[in-house]
Length: 252
Image (tube, rainbow, N blue to C red; front, top):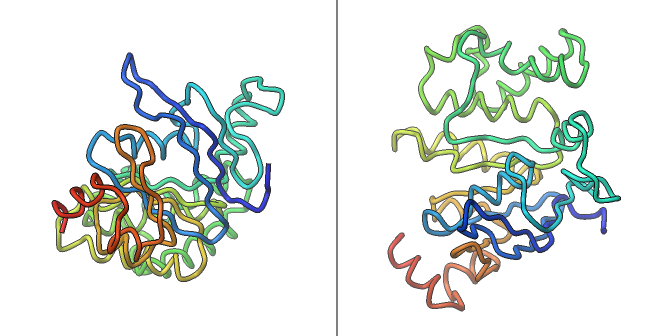
C-alpha cells in the first residue's frame, strides 16, 4: 500500500437491497490533488464519497486514507469505534445541508470537535477557528448563530468547521446544490482558494465550469462504474466515451 497517496480506493463495491450502486471502483488521489466526481443523478457519486469516510460501509474492496486502511484493520477485522474515529478524523466532510448545530454560535460550532476530539485547549481552538473564519470570509460572524446566516454563509462555516480538524483530505458532497444560485459563487470561491493552497480534495459536483477550473482529474461515474477518468481539458474537450459526450451536451 503506497503511503504517498492521500486516498486509495481498491475494487470498491456497494449494493443497497439488490441494486449495485458501486461496482469495482478503484481510484487514487495524490496529496494536494483535486479530484471531481461527475455523473448523472443516482450514478453512485455520493455513495462513493460516503464510503471514503465509512459513513457507508462498502460490501467489498478497501479504502486507505494517508496510508491507513479505514473500517477494517490489516487483519481484516472490523475496527472498533475509537480506531474508526481516528482514521475518519483524517477526512473533513462538507455535506449539501450544512449540518451546523443551531444552538451553538459559529465560533462554538467550529471549536467543538477540536476541543473534544483532538483535545485542543479552548484558547488554541478559538485562535485557529478565527483564522479559518478569516479564510472563508466570515471573520465578523464568530458570535452569530446559524439561524441568522444565509445558506452560502452556513456552508462556508461548515467548510471552516471541517478544516478545523486539520484533515488529510476534504470531501465535498455537492456543496452548492442546496444554495440559491446567487450564493453558489461565494462557496466555490472558497473551495478554489483551498485548492490553490494545496489541500487534497474530492468533490462531487454538478457545476461543470467549476470542475473544469479546479480539478487535477475528473472522474465520471455511470451506474456505479468509473467509465472515464482524465485531466479536465481532455475530459471536457475530447471525452473518449459517447456517454460522457451526451452528458456534457446536456450540462452546458
